[in-house]
Image (tube, rainbow, N blue to C red; front, side, top):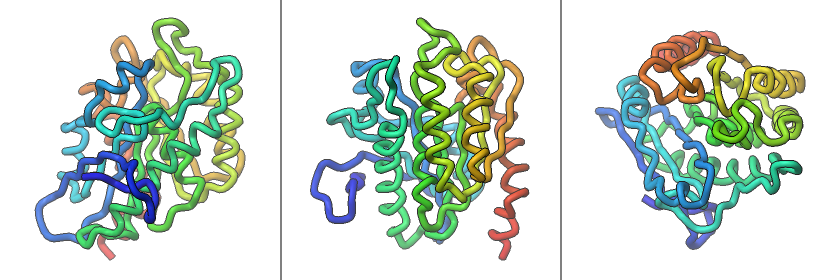
Length: 260
């Protein structure tokens, strides 16, 4: 399917994939967002983001899952909207706003579908996608009840700067900026040995976000394999993040709302 960037827009549009649970609905919705490869060639090779076992986890629990490809990635293609500039002078706020525009466009499209419950939505993302959903939450989109940030951030390169992303203090500024207008609870999950974002930076970003009053929860998991950045996608990581996710959803009353 193609998702218009704005309700009145003509192309360009985002390519997205929808996965449905059995039944007729209306279903709660998960908007799942991908990360960002290091270069343009790798971004174009992404095709669609098909982490099927992870998508299946949510579908089995009754969610419809929509997975957009943001501008400049994979099957959507086109100009890369969420570039942040140079490593020394990274503009993560602008990059986050552009990524959020794509997340919110996807959300609006999905909420218009008759089989979707527009009032029961979770935004989720891995790496750059985790940062994108934190930025999107700052716009207080209607119907979004929770945000799931898996290893979120920008500017990391495990080959040239393991654990040391570009301008981490600017990412803290961006997290503070987006946190100021965020009132949707978010769960942040990282592993201790994330080779994109070392834990001291993660904790600094979280403190900046939560310090604004944004309702945020951080869970740091033990080291996973050679690179804990794969927390969301690795077989070893899945039981860890799934347990923390279920505890978080209980805490915010998600299951009670479903029963009601």
